[in-house]
Image 1 (cartoon, rainbow, N blue to C red):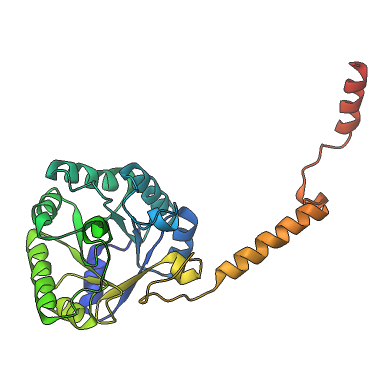
Image 2: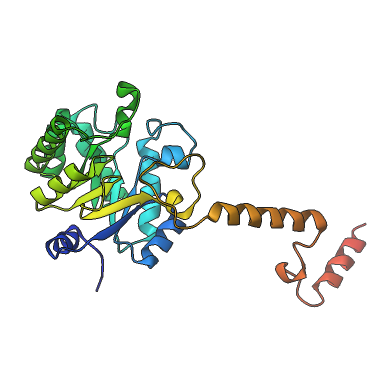
Length: 284
């Protein structure tokens, strides 16, 4: 019998007035540790382009790469609710391509939900993927994949007009079949209104405590982020210091000859060295 966390479980959590946690991660090891900690949801985000591959935006990451790392996260955390992020150009080209690519996450990587950064232009995409039998998390608010068009990212919902527009957009996505919403970088007041307005779970990313759940990326939580963290993030450890210290100690041991020592080496079976030396001597 499995204890796998499903969308239904998160919906029941919301209905009970409780919160749930989510972490964005990109590899087997981190996923395994996060799952063991009790985190209910993992998201394999296209932010991997930045934190794993060193790009300055999410745009360069490919569909094949995202499928591969999503499958790795699933292997590390088979019982969490797993969300896969649809990368740039995986759903913008056509509705058919969107459904096909979303299906790859489900069939090849074991994802429970696919996340799509949405505007009103993608209502039909959300509807088509949902109609194909897949759960969709509609991502509103700050949408990193639009950086090429916008030139910069800014907090959303900070005026009444912006808030009304975002609430309306969420309504249209829910009507199109979205099973969850993710609200990024949005004024907490607006995010809370959205959360209370819909029955489906709402995840916040820099959008306040009024959401049903919240998500941060694993490197931020662990203090492993290279560069400046966003205002809304928080680190719960400073593992970058420990990483650097450990690598330094290792390098010193190598240079001094302390490692590898006899304890960390394999050895020939008794008498085999003498036999080997004898064979070598005979062949000279």
